[in-house]
Image (cartoon, rainbow, N blue to C red; front, side, top):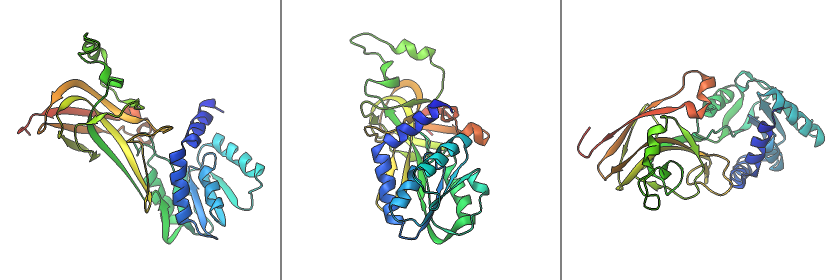
Length: 286
């Protein structure tokens, strides 16, 4: 199999805040005897956590046949065939022999919705979740905000590099989304606004507008959430960045953005294919 796939899972399992958040959520949701569905099961990390917290049986659904083969080996190695059933295929088409108490999944992309997780979970729940059963996460929100970088990333191409100018580099960059892991926290020039077809980001702090940032927050269960911004050490998700020509802005200005989602479910999973059309409205305009 592609070694990059295993590397991706390695990085995800090494993300301690991610794993701790799901561990806490499953500790709340799973009771002794619970039936659990793990959607997009991968290396079965969430399935194993559910068993740890007392699940009677877990149905692990994985679409990728290569990853399903890995999961099958993990089940055999741990002698879990009586507690864990692997189903290889599209979760939306699965109808199980008994209703589940909990559905859990971690299919968030860097922007949040690229894998259509919440739609998939809703489909699975309609067929397989008992009344009053729980879905983890129960909500996924993607937000956009205007930012100024702190001497890194796209913010490097400015007018003060040890007394010299590097802003000419901006002329050579195509308008295209980037993924970024922050080394230093950016300045938020606007509040974060939920993503929609059209978004207005009202500038609340004066500064040098560098980009629009996109990130997600997953509300897993009461008191437990997970987000890729503010970032944390070991976070396996980058944030989504739409670079803009560096522009001074002040309170009262606004970035007006039109969001273009790629057509087709396969294309929507390529997060760098999501794009924005942005204009800046000065105070009192628009």
